[in-house]
Image (cartoon, rainbow, N blue to C red; front, side, top):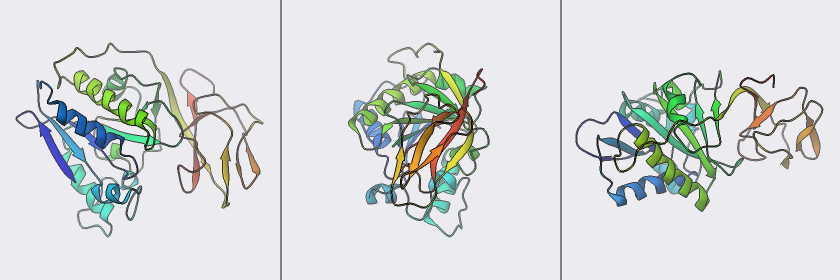
Length: 262
């Protein structure tokens, strides 16, 4: 785990990259921020988390770090021990965690509950939507940090994701009073989606997804397939993080749109 700091004193704000080693956009954003040497009003901690997985260009080494929090310092896997180290480093820090995805090309924010400080910070970021995890936060960073915003910055490995992450880091640091070069963005109205269920995968050689994330799927619509066998919606939903190969055992999630029946 690589830890950098801008500004003197004990940071109350942190940015975390490379929780997944195949998502390098946040590392680029942190390195660009360090190289720019911006004017700092209060200190910020900058963390590249899973360096071993990053070097291997794989999601994780032994288990998914973002399903392992709060971790165990004496745990049996690299990620369980790393989760405990990261939990300790982030104690008391308002945190931005940067990710990228195989499901959507524009940034969106993920919070544990869309009714508090995390949502307020997310509304000051230039993202397409806010997703509330609801009950689907087991083992995620939300288990270790009281105020955290995760941002999916775009497609994994893309230049656009790195550029989006770079912009969002600066917006987050303005919103938390770290950067003084520009005022924070005004709060924006974002659509809010609450995760409702997972969409499991059956074992297959080939997977397909027919729909776009955040666009309503109607009951009876075929939205995915496993070896050509179509998966049909039982009821209306909004797909979130839905992709053919983003996860090993699920396509992604169904969600309900806030102030909507589906």
